[in-house]
Image (cartoon, rainbow, N blue to C red; front, side, top):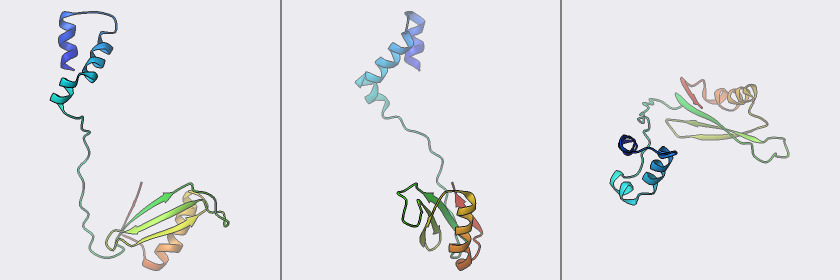
Length: 119
Protein backbone atom coordinates (compact mmCIF):
# COMPACT_ATOMS: atom_id res chain seq x y z
CA UNK A 1 0.00 0.00 0.00
CA UNK A 2 1.51 3.31 -1.09
CA UNK A 3 -0.02 5.28 1.78
CA UNK A 4 1.51 2.91 4.33
CA UNK A 5 5.02 3.13 2.87
CA UNK A 6 4.88 6.95 2.68
CA UNK A 7 3.67 7.13 6.30
CA UNK A 8 6.44 4.77 7.46
CA UNK A 9 9.05 7.02 5.84
CA UNK A 10 8.13 9.91 8.15
CA UNK A 11 6.49 8.41 11.28
CA UNK A 12 6.50 5.47 13.67
CA UNK A 13 4.05 4.31 16.33
CA UNK A 14 2.69 1.01 17.57
CA UNK A 15 -0.08 -0.37 15.33
CA UNK A 16 0.85 2.09 12.54
CA UNK A 17 -0.09 -0.45 9.86
CA UNK A 18 -3.50 -1.21 11.41
CA UNK A 19 -4.26 2.50 11.82
CA UNK A 20 -3.31 3.35 8.22
CA UNK A 21 -5.33 0.42 6.83
CA UNK A 22 -8.36 1.42 8.93
CA UNK A 23 -8.05 5.05 7.84
CA UNK A 24 -7.76 4.05 4.17
CA UNK A 25 -10.84 1.81 4.40
CA UNK A 26 -12.92 4.55 6.03
CA UNK A 27 -11.71 7.47 3.89
CA UNK A 28 -14.55 8.39 1.51
CA UNK A 29 -12.29 10.44 -0.77
CA UNK A 30 -9.86 7.50 -1.10
CA UNK A 31 -12.68 5.10 -1.95
CA UNK A 32 -14.15 7.44 -4.55
CA UNK A 33 -10.77 7.90 -6.23
CA UNK A 34 -9.83 4.21 -6.25
CA UNK A 35 -13.21 2.76 -7.18
CA UNK A 36 -14.52 -0.62 -6.04
CA UNK A 37 -12.20 -3.58 -5.60
CA UNK A 38 -12.49 -6.03 -8.45
CA UNK A 39 -11.48 -9.64 -8.23
CA UNK A 40 -9.68 -11.05 -11.17
CA UNK A 41 -11.54 -13.95 -12.71
CA UNK A 42 -10.41 -16.47 -15.23
CA UNK A 43 -11.57 -15.94 -18.80
CA UNK A 44 -14.76 -17.69 -19.81
CA UNK A 45 -14.27 -20.46 -22.28
CA UNK A 46 -16.56 -21.21 -25.20
CA UNK A 47 -17.27 -24.89 -25.69
CA UNK A 48 -17.77 -26.10 -29.21
CA UNK A 49 -20.27 -28.92 -29.08
CA UNK A 50 -21.06 -30.60 -32.36
CA UNK A 51 -23.70 -33.21 -31.57
CA UNK A 52 -26.19 -34.05 -28.81
CA UNK A 53 -24.84 -36.01 -25.84
CA UNK A 54 -21.20 -35.44 -26.85
CA UNK A 55 -20.45 -33.28 -23.78
CA UNK A 56 -22.37 -33.41 -20.51
CA UNK A 57 -22.28 -31.89 -17.04
CA UNK A 58 -22.77 -33.74 -13.76
CA UNK A 59 -23.31 -32.42 -10.25
CA UNK A 60 -24.76 -33.67 -6.97
CA UNK A 61 -27.23 -31.53 -5.04
CA UNK A 62 -27.84 -32.12 -1.35
CA UNK A 63 -28.19 -33.24 1.29
CA UNK A 64 -31.92 -32.61 1.21
CA UNK A 65 -34.63 -33.97 3.53
CA UNK A 66 -34.73 -37.78 3.34
CA UNK A 67 -37.56 -39.16 1.19
CA UNK A 68 -39.70 -42.22 1.97
CA UNK A 69 -37.43 -44.22 -0.34
CA UNK A 70 -34.34 -43.12 1.60
CA UNK A 71 -32.96 -40.65 -0.94
CA UNK A 72 -31.39 -37.44 0.30
CA UNK A 73 -29.33 -36.24 -2.68
CA UNK A 74 -30.06 -35.50 -6.34
CA UNK A 75 -27.77 -36.40 -9.25
CA UNK A 76 -28.17 -33.60 -11.81
CA UNK A 77 -27.13 -34.32 -15.41
CA UNK A 78 -27.28 -31.99 -18.42
CA UNK A 79 -26.31 -32.23 -22.07
CA UNK A 80 -24.39 -29.17 -23.29
CA UNK A 81 -25.77 -29.26 -26.86
CA UNK A 82 -29.51 -29.68 -26.19
CA UNK A 83 -29.47 -28.33 -22.60
CA UNK A 84 -31.53 -31.43 -21.68
CA UNK A 85 -31.51 -31.75 -17.86
CA UNK A 86 -32.25 -34.79 -15.75
CA UNK A 87 -32.48 -35.06 -11.97
CA UNK A 88 -32.14 -38.50 -10.38
CA UNK A 89 -32.74 -39.02 -6.65
CA UNK A 90 -29.93 -40.93 -4.94
CA UNK A 91 -29.42 -42.05 -1.32
CA UNK A 92 -25.88 -40.68 -0.92
CA UNK A 93 -22.93 -38.98 -2.64
CA UNK A 94 -20.70 -42.06 -2.66
CA UNK A 95 -18.80 -42.42 -5.95
CA UNK A 96 -20.11 -45.93 -6.61
CA UNK A 97 -23.73 -44.76 -6.18
CA UNK A 98 -23.19 -41.81 -8.54
CA UNK A 99 -21.45 -44.05 -11.10
CA UNK A 100 -24.22 -46.69 -11.00
CA UNK A 101 -26.95 -44.09 -11.48
CA UNK A 102 -24.99 -42.34 -14.24
CA UNK A 103 -24.80 -45.63 -16.16
CA UNK A 104 -28.41 -46.62 -15.42
CA UNK A 105 -30.11 -43.26 -16.03
CA UNK A 106 -27.96 -41.65 -18.74
CA UNK A 107 -25.37 -43.84 -20.45
CA UNK A 108 -27.76 -46.77 -20.99
CA UNK A 109 -30.15 -44.43 -22.87
CA UNK A 110 -27.91 -41.87 -24.60
CA UNK A 111 -24.51 -43.55 -24.80
CA UNK A 112 -21.15 -42.62 -23.32
CA UNK A 113 -20.35 -38.89 -23.64
CA UNK A 114 -17.01 -37.86 -25.12
CA UNK A 115 -16.52 -35.31 -22.31
CA UNK A 116 -17.94 -35.33 -18.78
CA UNK A 117 -17.73 -32.13 -16.71
CA UNK A 118 -17.91 -32.45 -12.93
CA UNK A 119 -16.61 -30.39 -10.03
